[in-house]
Length: 362
Ligand SMILES: *Cc1c(COP(=O)(O)O)cnc(C)c1O
Image 1 (spheres, rainbow, N blue to C red):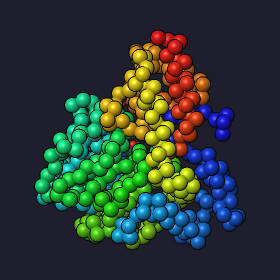
Image 2 (cartoon, rainbow, N blue to C red; image 1 turned 45 degrees about the vertical axis):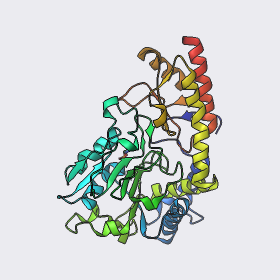
Image 3 (cartoon, helix red, strand yellow; image 1 turned 90 degrees about the vertical axis):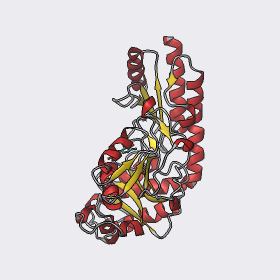
């Protein structure tokens, strides 16, 4: 492992070494079955055991209540942008959508195709560098649900706690880039969805946790595949799911459990991100872009003194085995994605490199 580069890519992202090792083995021979995980029928007993383990560990890690279904779907988080309103938002209803970045905007765009969208708060006025404070949010009186993006992968901001609509509207959350990075109270939510490729596994699987009574209310006129109830009834095997992806997600869940679960993950992530932010605060060369009260523990966004020096920084870092530090094309600068699987040593190495680069170039 020590000779591997550190991968700061925003997603698909780095995976824990034990997960990669177990996957190598299972690609060849799944659990002594003689054939590999990608070669098993999605209805056979070997894959059924994988699926059961994935769901069981997910429920255990987040204490998912029994009235919620855990699904492993395809289409990424992006399909959830339209599936959520299709299932939960009537043409004559309103949903609240907090606008904290590019992914929120994409979710809003889709929801508008199905009903009315009210935006209780937005940070677009300052290029999404902050999370609108709870006191500033103007919720609608009877929203079908309240959607938020818990971590803004591109802008490096993260909700410290869930929005609390006074109407008691169920929360719908795009948790793609911070799911299972800290404890979560699932009972506050109607729907939690996440593309797996940031914190939970490879791309091609979306983890969806949905309250069953909400799924029951969806119009039967929707295409069968786009109704949550179809996948609940079919236990994520209505059609052939991403069997390989679900296997890897099950291994990531097992790894998180071994680390001590979500509370331990949360402590680990705080301890990992804080020296990097502390350095950004003291540096006169690099500058963090997110407001300190809104900083993400998953995606640390920062700028250098000039675009030229930023380019040089990214290239020199890559040559030293620190990969994927280029910021999203829509904002520029740098972004260090330090999800669950990024070891502390990766962040320490990055800080050392940043200090050396600052000394050499200021
Ligand atoms: C990456 C990401 C998405 C997009 O996920 P896909 O699986 O590519 O559809 C959506 N929302 C957030 C917050 C993300 O980080």
